[in-house]
Length: 522
Ligand SMILES: NC(=O)C1=CN([C@@H]2O[C@H](COP(=O)(O)OP(=O)(O)OC[C@H]3O[C@@H](n4cnc5c(N)ncnc54)[C@H](O)[C@@H]3O)[C@@H](O)[C@H]2O)[C@@H](O)CC1
Ligand SMILES: Nc1ncnc2c1ncn2[C@@H]1O[C@H](COP(=O)(O)OP(=O)(O)O)[C@@H](O)[C@H]1O
Ligand SMILES: [K+]
Image 1 (cartoon, helix red, strand yellow):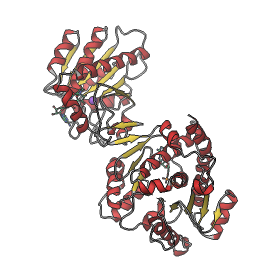
Image 2 (tube, protein in one colour):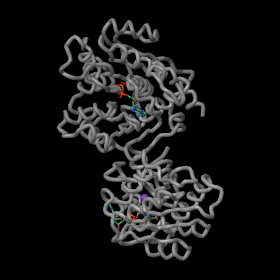
Image 3 (cartoon, helix red, strand yellow):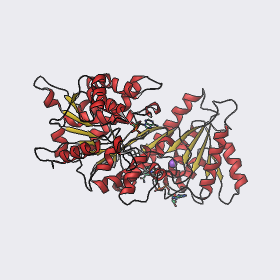
Image 4 (cartoon, helix red, strand yellow):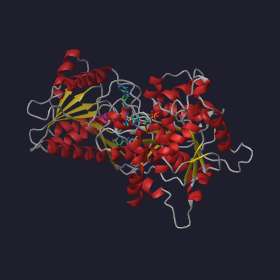
């Protein structure tokens, strides 16, 4: 598991150590220098003659870069520090100069000089981005913004070293300067990094879209901080999911393993029913019951003879894939599925006569329009950004899809607050928010963005919730963890289905059993 803490938590953990005189910046700078040396060695034969440009801001982030630059300069690297602010860390500057580093001050310089320095930086072997760290407030401003813009442009043009591999390797100090450390937003220009060396704790912004794609490989360095509160964000890894997977024992039977009730698909969209039930069957549900129009049920059974069509007790519900959501749909496109969906959700809340225990529910696509005002946390909503926008707007938020995509954690959290449900927001990085704590999963190849993949996820998650039904209802935070685990299995199944190439949604479902076997086998 990767845990990430907000900037305030990191500062609070740093404070007592700084007071006690612990050399945190020395530790950070030394680890940064070691990493840059390793990256240089991977790119060229000799350190001597290598060129490193440091972009240095006013605060401690710039200090880290300067002290690391001094270590590099002592190893024979030609180091140039470019100061983008009126101030720079005094001790760091002195140390770099003493070690033989060069300093270029951009304060008071015009755009031409900024452009020339950017062109120079574009010819370096490594650029170290030490403009801003967790002290960033809003978008990069002034000279810093101009330089980053000019450099990003030069790199896009390919103004790299003539004899080298084309463009400099960019190492961000703590985080790429100007990203939202806590929320992964991109309020302004950001120099995309190939590697981010982060100190003390991973910051949520490194794991969240859209910033995550600007961070490159994230290397976390332990500088001795004790972060004991709950993390702001977590990312499950394969071992976490393998450990928690409910492997059936000798006393289990199909009902103890969990029955999934699926309300999905209509005559207009029968495929969604096949994909959802396939996801559930392939994830190891004890049984899958399909509730829907007769013709769709026949298609389901033809594809998956394991599925039982008709009513009966279930341990989890999946409601909504392939069910139209808008009021503009012709009534016959519904086939009574909205009514069945509403009844399933009432059963899942424990409100339906004859239902003894409430059950977890996955609510996807058209099911989202059937939700009541408030939901229990064991309801997992699985919208993509468009569906989340519709859901938020229906609850009074004046938000557009591009705004949701620019701040997915923020809006998933808002939807969680407004509904009470657990929210899994699908995308290249999937964000899950429960009543306490959030997850970000980046397990899927871009090839997974294909029609029907979300239906498979809904079925897979339904099976995982059914297997732990009572626990999920009892522990309000568990649904989010199970949902994050489902996103991991889904993404890994897509990779396994066809490593490096296109996948169809049904291929993803077919790859789930071997994916699970690998996870539990570790
Ligand atoms: N505090 C500590 O103990 C440690 C801190 N470390 C480093 O220190 C960093 C945090 O340092 P600081 O708190 O000094 O903060 P930063 O270095 O991130 O930035 C603070 C400075 O940037 C300016 N600034 C803020 N937003 C700006 C914007 N949008 N555009 C232009 N300028 C802006 C501020 O006026 C301030 O002068 C961490 O990210 C990490 O790199 C490490 O050395 C490890 C130890
Ligand atoms: N760029 C991407 N990279 C990886 N996975 C993606 C990307 N975009 C979307 N996905 C995943 O693909 C699936 C698409 O689901 P969804 O949008 O519901 O499609 P459908 O409704 O057709 O099934 C989700 O699991 C989502 O997380
Ligand atoms: K930085």
